[in-house]
Amino acid sequence: MESLYKAFEKDFYIGASVTPELIQTQGDFIAKQFKSITAENQMKFEALQPKRGQFEFEVADQMVDFARTHGMKMRGHTLVWHQQTPKWVFTKANGACVGREELLETMKTHITQVMTHFKQAVYCWDVLNEAICDGPGYLRPSQWLKGIGEDYIDKAFCYAREADEKALLFYNDYNAVTPEKRDKIYQMVKGLIERGVPIDGIGIQGHWNINWPSYEQVKVAIEQYASLGLKLQITELDLSLYDGEEGDLGFKVPPEERLEKQAQCYERFFKLFKAYKEVITGVTFWGVADDYTWLDYFPVRYRKNWPFVFDQQYQAKLAYEKLINLSKN
Ligand code: HAH
Image (tube, rainbow, N blue to C red; front, side, top):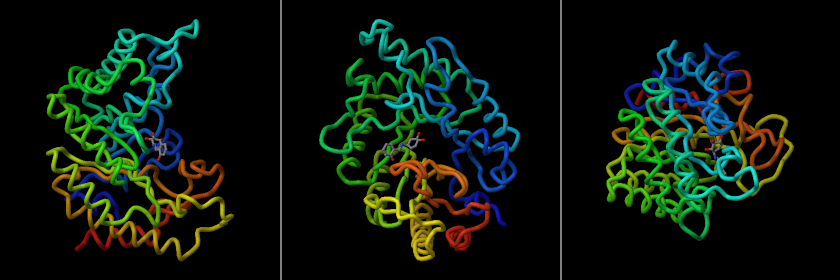
């Protein structure tokens, strides 16, 4: 099987999120097919600093070693997020909320320690993940926002630049191509730029499905974000076989018709990504192959999904064939 990343080498880095188990069992496959990896969970706050001041880098270091050994790039995910962040960050032992100054200090220490540790190993960081509301409202009312105030975002990026002046600093979010949220993300990032806050790019997560979003929606979003003069990456691509509203339909194998639709979607989106290769620097899948995906548990627990271009046996799907053909045009 031809290498997917080599097929798109002239366009952007093709990446995948991985786990230590996947590296262990599928390392050769991953190194052959992808130019970049992201740790699915192992660089999140709760993984790196489960207790105050107690940093645990061992597992993430092994993932970095794997990337280095195989000449792969490593994306860092993620420094500041409302999820997978330990309770101690926001709450004191007596149950009281941590105050602004202490929370800022915690944030600064975490960003500084982590980015310093991974300097040169991680070329690009999701500094801030998912800070914008899906529905009405602007900034997500996270404990970071409540504890620090709106400037927590500026601070996060400034601390990040101070810690590692070379790493690319990204804002990363899902639903980033839906018009309402897209405009809010655009405004937020525009504000950062106007205030001189250091930011290099926007990560469009890309948790999409075979009916959504439209080609046009993705295109408009890419153009709008690119108009800010930043780099873009698709950071967490997977194309669910289910529409958002569908429950568990009990499929034992993926229906042929849905796989065809999925392949068409992959083809169309990659055609679009190629057309914007000057601004899109990376396209990362949120997993490797259909044997394991977070979508087997979200948003419906134990509903099997098949969102990637490699099947459960690590064989090429129709989507892979279409991408390889597309890369040759
Ligand atoms: C992402 N959230 C996270 O960035 C990633 O760290 C995690 O492993 C999986 C998905 C996506 C998300 C969503 O699509 C809908 C609601 C909440 C979060």
